[in-house]
Image (cartoon, rainbow, N blue to C red):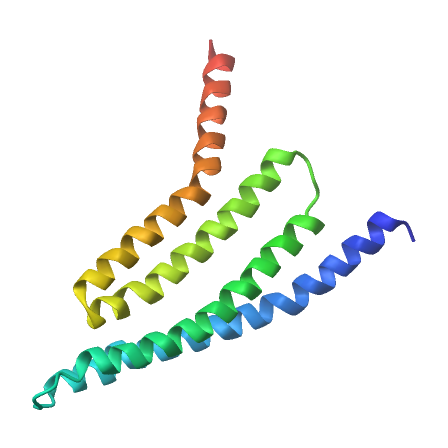
Length: 160
């Protein structure tokens, strides 16, 4: 067995082991997020007390969601990296697009999970989180936008 085939097999095994745990952690993140936003945070806003319980309950669910989200993002990154290693390398730019698209999707999932909970803690915290997610997302989206512009330019040259 050649070295390339052996490393592809190792990355294939790594992909098959990290993708299911990514899905499992993503589902756990979704369940914690859903119970927090749909049940516990609205209930905490109905309780009448001198101290507002909503930011406290939101913080608890924020930490629980972050715990599962970090595990899901790490497994997702491992899955994306191993998929790029086993994918047939037709061109280096295609692999770059796959990698950055996967990372951008992970950032998008993290933003969807974190922003609503951080908004319940405090609106300023939610706004700061939104700006951070947009900046990190644009960092990963820049190569994708560059690739799309290059493709459009090459199609325009071919049509002339």
